[in-house]
Length: 405
Image (tube, rainbow, N blue to C red; front, side, top):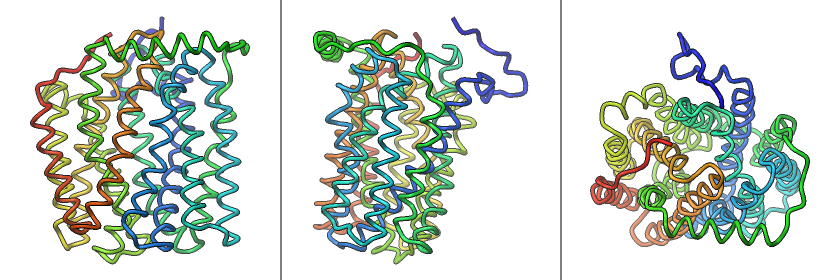
C-alpha cells in the first residue's frame, strides 16, 4: 500500500514527488504535444484537400471510432497482461505509423482517403493502450492522491493543448503538415523507454480473454455506479465532439484564420483548462462533485455557443479560454469518478467502457455535427451544440457519481 506523501508547500503538485508517477507524467506530457501536433496537421491538411464539412468532420470520426471499437477488448487485455508492456509496444508501433504518414505527406502522396486511413490506423493502435494508461495511475499513486493525480493528468493533456497547437500551427505554416506528423512520431519515443514491464510476459489464452470480456459486459449491465458515470459522460461527449471536429473549419471559414491562428484557438481552450486545474479540488469541495460537473457543463455550453455566434476572433479566443475552465472541471471529475466505479481487479475494463462511451458518442456526434453544419452553417452548429450542452447539463444534474473507493 502506497503511503500519502507530505504535501507541504507542494500542495496539489505533491503527487509529482512519486518517482514513477513523475516519469509517467512527463512522457505523457511529451506524447500529448505530439498528439496535438498531429491533430492540427491533420485538421489543417484536410481543409486544404476539401472544404466539404462532412469530410472535414470525418477526421475526428476516424480518430475516435477505433477507440469505440477496440476499447473493451483493449481493457480486457490491460487487466490480463502487464500494462506497461502493452503501452510500450503500442508506442513503438505508433512511432512507425506516424513516421510513415510524415513521409507520405512530404512526398505528396496523401489524399483524403490516405489521410483518413492513416488517422484511423494511428487511432487503432493508440486505442489498444488507452485503457492501460487509465488503469495505470491508481497503481502508482496513493488512493488519497488520486484526484490530484487525475487533475495533473489533465494538465499533462491540456498544457500541450496550450503549447502544442500554436507551435504546430506555426510549424505547419512554415514547414507543412508533414513536419507536424514527424513531431508526433518523435513524441512516442520517450514512452517506449520509460514503460518498463514489471513482470515476465505470460501466455494469454483465448479462454481468459473471453472470460474477461464477459465480465466487462456483466459489470456494465449490473453496476449502478458505473452506469451513472457513463450516463454523465455520454451527455458531455455528444456536445464536446463539435469542438475538435469542426473547429478547423470554423477557424478557416468563419474567422478566415491562418493555421497559426487556428492553433491559438485550440491553445486558448487548453489555457483555460490548465488555469482551472490548480483550483478544481476547491471547486468540487465548494459545489460538490455533481454540482461542479453541472456548473462546468453550463459554462462550457454557453462559451461554445458564443464561439459560434461571434464574428470576433479575439472574443472567440476569450470564450474558448473560459470554456476550458468548464471543460477540465467536468472531465477531471468524470475521469476520477470512473476509477471508483469498479473494483481494482477490473479497473481497466471499466475504464474501457468509459472510453467506449466517450469516443463512440464523439465519433457519432462529429459525423452528425458535420451534417448539421452543411445544412445551417458551422457557426450556427456551434450555437446549437452549446445550447444542447446546457440542456443536457440540466437533465443530468441530479445523477450522483461515485467519489470514494
